[in-house]
Length: 118
Image 1 (cartoon, rainbow, N blue to C red):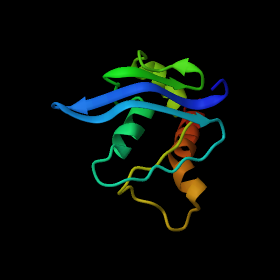
Image 2: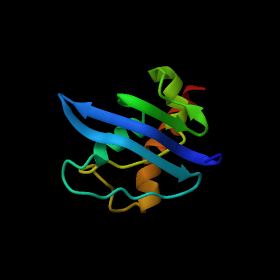
Image 3: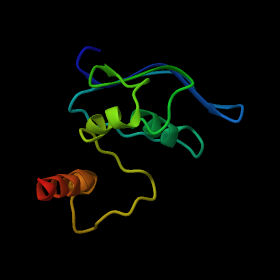
Image 4: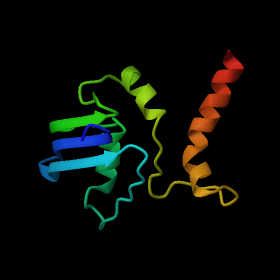
């Protein structure tokens, strides 16, 4: 998909011989909101960690905003991470903030820190 924010192409990921994701293809358009639901151990957290570049796929490609993120190093992933937001299960949320504000909170904090350092 040409205007995809996230593309997974034939992604495989496993741990200690246990396959968690097998040949996953996924396209998420820009400006879309995606909910990932499934039972315990179904691969939700692994999927989010792959998209964030926290782990690499065993096979396949992860593209973010049209860029192949699979081979990128940590410092090259940082600008891409700043353009996305997600909340892991068990994350502490602020009940005084909206859903958007909770997801955007790290970005807002990071932006304030950057402007103070300038």
